[in-house]
Length: 152
Image (spheres, one colour):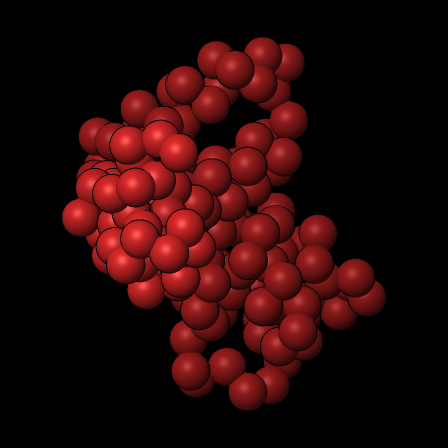
């Protein structure tokens, strides 16, 4: 029998009970460490990495540049400079064009569902509470601009 086993077997019966094992493990083992996966989740949430990635990917897909890496580098630099709030990456013309992509019927209005999808494509998770019916191009551009500027 090894010295470690003898030390763990407190009552000397050559059988380790759970209590003996636990006592030995807690007095000799390493301190409980946080789950690495939980540490990653906390880091991602703390720095809003999913939001940044969603917004960056939406901008990339919208612009479809020849050099996506250079585009993303410039885009992230713009976000950093703007503090991620108030980014002026999307112009009002860009937002009007995006409206046209979601106005599938070409009637000049989009449904609240289409509005939600367009806002998500811009990296905006929450829609303004005042949207209950059809959204015009002017309203979409105004609300999207306000949400982007506020960093919703």
